[in-house]
Image 1 (cartoon, rainbow, N blue to C red):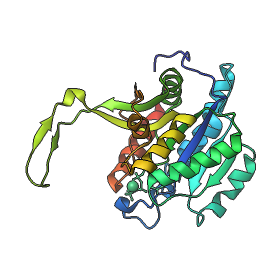
Image 2 (image 1 turned 60 degrees about the vertical axis):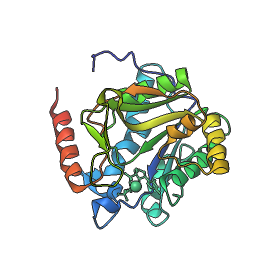
Image 3 (image 1 turned 120 degrees about the vertical axis):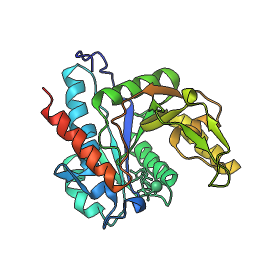
Length: 254
Ligand code: CTP
Ligand code: MG
């Protein structure tokens, strides 16, 4: 960070959808990874607390409006445990049920956001709860870019060399690394664009892996917002140790 807070931005028209509806099968734990403890609280608390407390506090201090709504996409089995938090932030925080795939969870979360906000939110910021390390600065940067370009996604240039294989065992080709970005979340998109995109994806049976690829399918621009390598996604057990170490380091920073 550069030390000043000039990245603060008005978020009165931006709602957040926090995805915590996955099963975490690759983690092979006894519960979905978003509920595992990371530095004393469940993984999903890190971003939930960011959207409901740390980001609003920062924005208000800088004279900007906080985001008005957060939708928490979570399996109904786990919702009762989180009901007290939803009650505490009533009118601001609501549940939505997950879909079978991530995309279905995004659709359900978005519908709930539209229902809650009644037109107040023009933008949806969709975040994976499996990325607990995202910072206030990254969130502000990607929302700023979405307002300028219509859609934006956090990401970083690929450090690894990526090879493509067709048969799963030999190299077909090496993709020029200079052109590759690894994308993170939040992904921030105009809600009306996302709704048009969902209609097209459904009508043409297109395969989409993330939210901005829906915007790509419409042929509309998506800004790559430079984020940080530390915004990692918790996928397998060793990721928990890395995340833990990064948080420990941050806590001890001056
Ligand atoms: N997610 C969701 N609903 C789904 C699938 C995924 O809300 N039907 C969320 C996950 O909770 C996670 C994010 O989307 O925060 C990214 O997905 P991923 O890392 O793939 O998580 P899982 O699908 O839970 O893990 P796995 O693929 O290993 O089963
Ligand atoms: Mg998955």
